[in-house]
Image 1: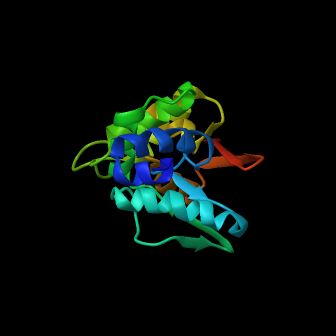
Image 2: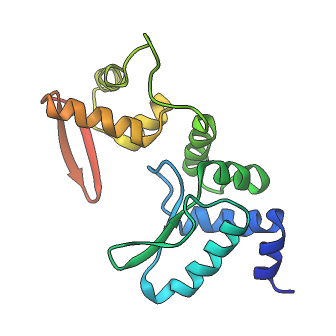
Length: 177
């Protein structure tokens, strides 16, 4: 039996194969859940990885999808929790910090509840306190909130002309403006 077949039959083996793949190949930092996108030339490899994840109920959807011309899939939050608990931690400490954020937030909803402080206020307080340019990922790690929550608050603040932005490469940074 090869590694592929063993990974299909054992969550333990699958987790130990997937964790380094997540660390090195998956989009991970700055996302709510790990995402693997490949060129169409690598579709067969992607299909094998997807089959392992699907077999263990670790995917967010039932089939590989496309972003433009490139195939991709995501590992569910609960799937990531299971993989990380079996095979973690990562070698990269920053990725472990992000993994811990995902573990903390799994099963929680929203950035605030009821009469608690709104996420927009948390973002503004953080940017004022830090007094420097921060990316959404930086804000997420400091506020212990997922990117989808922080991005929505940043959009609201940007529309109200409260924030300035600057781009360095692919990353957008924000500060009170």
